[in-house]
Image 1 (cartoon, rainbow, N blue to C red):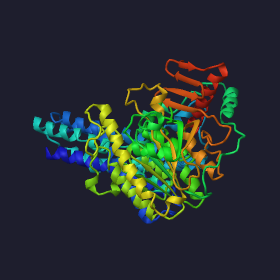
Image 2 (image 1 turned 180 degrees about the vertical axis):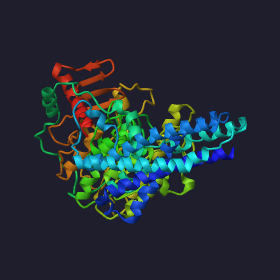
Image 3 (image 1 turned 90 degrees about the horizontal axis):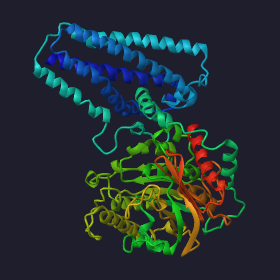
Image 4 (image 1 turned 135 degrees about the vertical axis):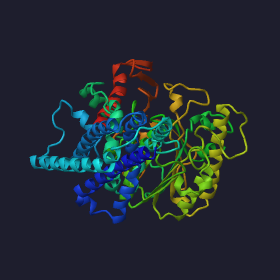
Length: 609
């Protein structure tokens, strides 16, 4: 038994040595970038990358583990031959990926994934000099030979003379093999392992890229390769350009609603907050009295829609002005997100201090990589709170996050741009508060959790209004997405995506004002920047809804379908059935083509990032 466990452990060490060596090769190959890193950051790229290394190791150990289990009754030669064949094949493929990744990164600036598959049939995606090809082939051959020798010395030599054994050894080895699910998944929490877990540097993208395991990244991308490319023929090119430009055309001036040209800006994003929590929007009384009061004090946008149906999509829509996608979430593709515009970067260029505060797991849905690409000056997440406060399924409850957010706001240098994301109103709706809205059904618990968040929000604003920074601050309150509850709205129902947006704060010149223009999360970027005279064409899906000639429109996107809503119009299209589910207020084919033009532009943009 000990001999077989020893072989299993040695095989683990062999692959971990390979992965660490691959990372060192990457760092040396890109020495010009590596030398720009602090020594600690170089070491951290190796340390943080170890999580993905362990995950690939877990996958690679499954078959050898089963071989050891099944060969306890056979001669050592059987196991030896099978391990030789399996390992050499894996080494050839893995080293090929590692070597190709070196040159891919030199040209494209991102680690190897499924992107080269998009170029099949279209020629070589990058031009590589013959000398580079020779150099890479030599590297591949040298390292293949080196690791074949290491494998023989570390593992195969220990297989020779292995004795047959009994069922107990087989049982133990089966348990050891089954335990590989732990490093494969990479966590016991809610969020399974993803590329973002190794992103450790807040601003240096190369340091984060160096931590990625190219083999893991390629496998992950291949599993999702079918979702990477959207159709290029959803609407013909001439119509796409014509109608998309019409959607965003505007000659009207921007209505000035601020009393300062350089306000502090705070965006508070509330988890799952549907418009039905707000009484001024006809919502359920008593659920969010503080938010309803703020709506009456400031500017209430009555036709605000989430772009998608998940937090990861809402964050990108708000901070990058980028729509959700029907079959993917761009946040899961760091190579794509690094090319997005970021609202906080615009503020950084204007001399603002920027920060993001969240009580949840920063590795969930690749948040870490997205926020690192955004280059916030500071990111606060669950690991920065005391362990005793990390007592909900998703992390730290809202009252404590609001307290931390207030403290950070009071201590921040001005002007600042700050973002906070709440989480307590997410399923399972278990909040540390006496029950206010009775009932143990999902609807009642959802409303009660929303009331808890509203209570924390109200306390924050009571204290914020007494702060030194309040009088020069714009606060934008919205949601990451809507919710099926409280009345079980289907995914094609626009009310499922309708969310609140309120502007308030001491920098707001208008009080008790209603904005009826149709707007989306993607419009937040240019609507805020418009108040500073900084409308930005990089946010191509973002309209400034405070322009005086804007009635606006909103697009909401669900799994394999989308809705388009504007004054007097509502369209819902199903991609699978390739048909319209709803066509209200349509006066001609042009109305339908405008919604398709939006989606075709999105598909094209997503495919080409």
